[in-house]
Image 1 (cartoon, rainbow, N blue to C red):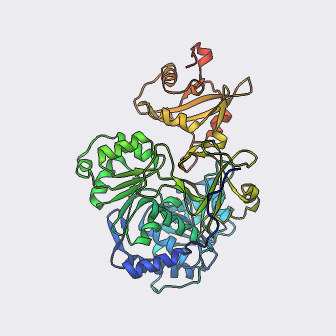
Image 2 (tube, rainbow, N blue to C red):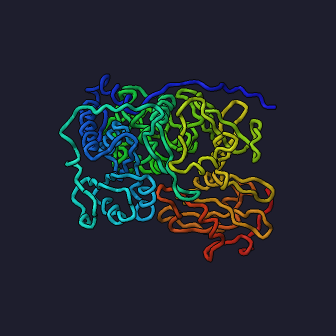
Image 3 (cartoon, helix red, strand yellow):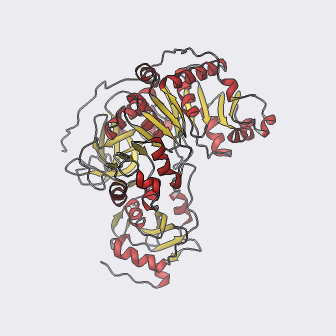
Length: 543
């Protein structure tokens, strides 16, 4: 019997996005809140904008419990409209700006929004599918009038007309457990589903990031992460709002503009994604980068390989560079490393006060430390996880076997309590009697100087066990032969993880949120362009 050393249920902190914003306005009114590519807003100025938008939405009939879909690029207005929707007790539904056609129709229809707010270019996409959106009543466009708007039968109006002249705060009674957002999943296991995010869940994620990052009111966090992602909204904007700190929003990531922006804004830390961290670490020196050495106290992102962490610390003078935790949209951050605690290579934090996290086998029996199994989660406090999938109780219950949320991920804890993410359960494969983590194989391949991106995935073999295939994209101008890569793998990987199949492609299939669609690669299997070690007659002795 494994001893349970984890504490039980507690009330924890309970809060709402609206209360956090009002406190920040009251306490930090004159302080910088947002830097929108050079245009700045204090907390007090932001509050006026939010109230005018909230009153404008109220005039459009938006009330507590209504959903509002937004299709917006990064800007201060995107932050303001989110806060305005929540001010009325409405539910913000930020949609990926890459979506169009069926991807867009599914989420807009599923959310049952009566109002959609979009950039002008994206508004044209909405017009194209408007006939399949039975609840849509109004379309608000930000920017020039879309050329195709004449084909829209509902009400349409420019952003400026939605902004009310009334700047009073339309106070609505909103509780911590009320919904603040619908954040749609990437749809890697079927159609995308709306994760119901309560006000307190969003606030708790912000509190987790405070503990993880060590940010203070003097911080200025720079980020190009899209504001249709929960990460940027809660982990950066809402987190800094709690502190009275500033946020610099950038429209989209650029290697060449990164260091000039850090210099211009005097940012103290930044929030990025794993690919951005690697691209910057590999980029050439520039004058702004040299002048900014040591300016950034911290950088956060995932995945964050140890070699790239070392580069950020040594080359850029960053004091804290860690991934810091493991989480998912449904459960926030379930393991994390509090700021200042000693890091351990290849780990993703430790257990935290908000969640009970266990590692189990296929029968939900808890496994001992050091043994990999599925990660299951329960909250220890009210409203710190999602409230389920929007209008999909059956899908919610499928993942709540034995009253635990089953993540579909594989991980393990060591004896010191550090957590190791191993792989997605469906991406974990078995070959030559050994279990293989596709993530570990991919991390190894990304250290090859010619490799830009890679997917390690299974191909069903004639012997009923998996075979391993690498599908790769090379860096621009790089040259690499399959046999050369095969022998490189033989030197770097255990014999059972050396791939039988290799295929180079100009692009890897990805969904609109940028995740590689491994299920598509698995289904395609061995294509006409796939190199086969056995057919090539290349031998590998067991090492």
